[in-house]
Amino acid sequence: MRLLCCHCRSITEVDAEGEPLRCCPNCQSTAVPADADDTATVTLTKHELRILGIWASNYAEGIKDRPGCEDSPKVVYGILDHLSTQTDVALSMRQEMADVRAAFPESKVTVYRNGEETDL
Image (cartoon, rainbow, N blue to C red; front, side):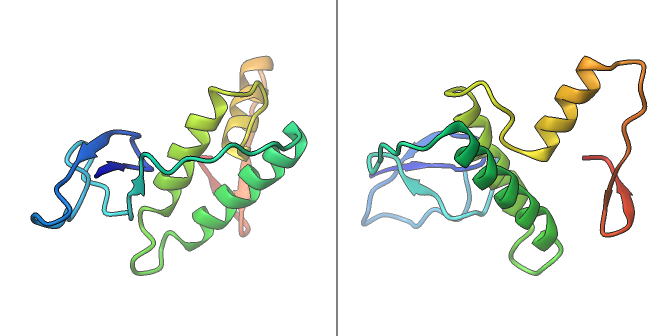
C-alpha cells in the first residue's frame, strides 16, 4: 500500500501486514495519511475552491490548541499548497495576505485572530 502524507506530500510504501506506521518517515507528522492511489477528480469554480480553502485553514488554525489537533494547520496547508499548483488564486488567508504584502511592500499589514495580532 502507498500512503500519502497530507502534510509534506511524501509517499511511503507499507506492507499492510507489517508494523503499523506511527508517523510520516519524512516529516514526522502524526496526521492520518491518505491512500495515495485513491484519487478523485473534482470540478469547482476557483471561487468555490477559494472559499473551501479559506474556511478549512481558518478552522484548522482555530483548533490547533486542542489535544490531537496540533497538526491540523500543517495538514490543511499541505493540501492547499498542493492545490495551489493547480490554480492561480490564493486558497487561504495566509496566501491572500502574502499576496497583499508582495503587492504593497511599503505598507504594514496587520492581521488579527480573536482580537489578537497573529503572524498569519
